Image 1 (cartoon, rainbow, N blue to C red):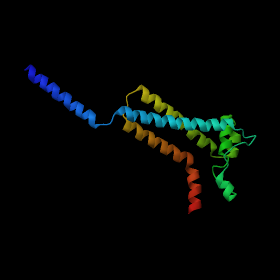
Image 2: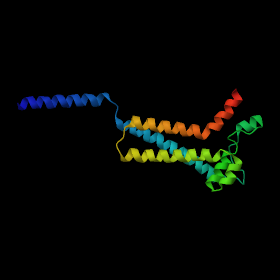
Image 3: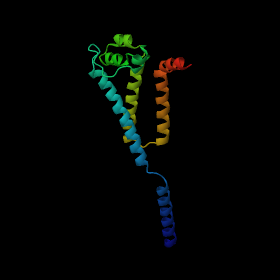
Length: 161
């Protein structure tokens, strides 16, 4: 009887080991997802730092609008840097005068920063189902992107057609 129980335990152990060897390690997936969130959060922080560092009054922005340089006409993103700078400084009305979509785009980036940091904290604190989290995260990110940038899509679609 003891020998039979021992054989069952050994068989169960081998079966479990076989399963573990065929599936990827969740810790690698977890690290990858953490890295992606950290990179996106870092980029967003750099965008906000750029907006805070350069002053709209001095007009010392190093990046100019390529569309305006080529065509001579402003595009929907013209003035976003100045708009972001005024939003960072708390002057929403002046920000809106530079780009009417500036606040919406700024809120998109702010929401994404909060979402990235929340994902990092959630992943580090709780066990999770990576597939479900990734799908939910992607759907929310895509929907908020479309909401924030829909006027840009409309503008460029009108140019194309």
